[in-house]
Length: 187
Length: 203
Image 1: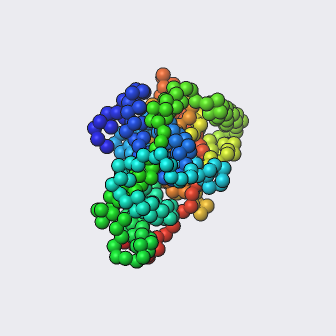
Image 2 (image 1 turned 90 degrees about the vertical axis):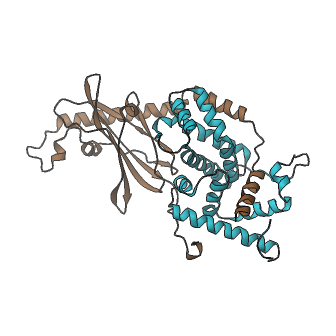
Image 3 (image 1 turned 30 degrees about the vertical axis):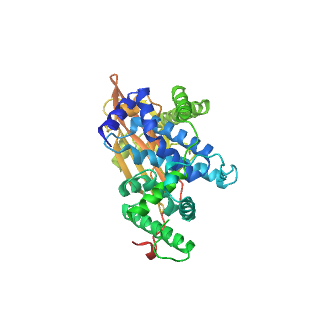
């Protein structure tokens, strides 16, 4: 955690509304993306993130200053998102349809990548089981280190390392298979 | 490998572009933060406080009506505020079921303690039930500002699924009065035990 965030957290603990908002804006992007990739429904992802921020802010008094904020907060987001996903899985809420919006403006990331390649890789990621998909999301969306992922998921760092390795291998294998078995996957 | 890492990041980002508004979401959060807790939550706090008061009353009546043994075999029974003794008279409570890392509230009971009793630092002790035995998971001292003026203590549940008992115990001096705090809450942390990694999973 950098000095700025430590200072922000200190001010937030003292009840400064502005500091809470800055923390919210700093962590919103990765939190909402992560929640959506877990729940696959924007409305419930927003609910999960809202609940996660509220819980984090209300628990700030018990948060130790010397610990990094992001893994702690990410764990709350994951828990909230998984709980809402359980409701989705039970059929109480619909998954968002992944239909192509004809008026949709493509992101710079999508322009930079081959569109078909994005879809293939995304489909492969979604085929991973949760034990391998979650560490992947925490690494590539939340930007956590392996040690931070271990803290966020409550598993040993060695297990995070092996799961990330296995996840990447499975993705490559899946893509290679789709491309007809041709060499190293280039998506 | 680095190129593949970048492709994963770019793919995930491309597929998770939020169509919502940060301002609107902050508006909802900010409004919730400014409001007092919900009626149900406040009601739960009152229920917790009422339960703690009932338990305390039952404990005091029992203590007054039961003479202390002349020569207790175990020194722990000589302590009026012994949490072990306190727990003997706890009304069976509902087990809270939570997710790993979720916030848990423990209703606090407190009562004035006469001079001469053992002073014990305020602490939170977490026990885990394993094969009909209890294993100490964590013991940490509590800061007075975590407790003072609060009717509940908020703690984060353990990450390992299982059955846990949270115990708060200790004495503190506030405005010249010695007070003993005691609370106990059983928590079930949901989830499966971590699966063992197969040989194929090793890098």
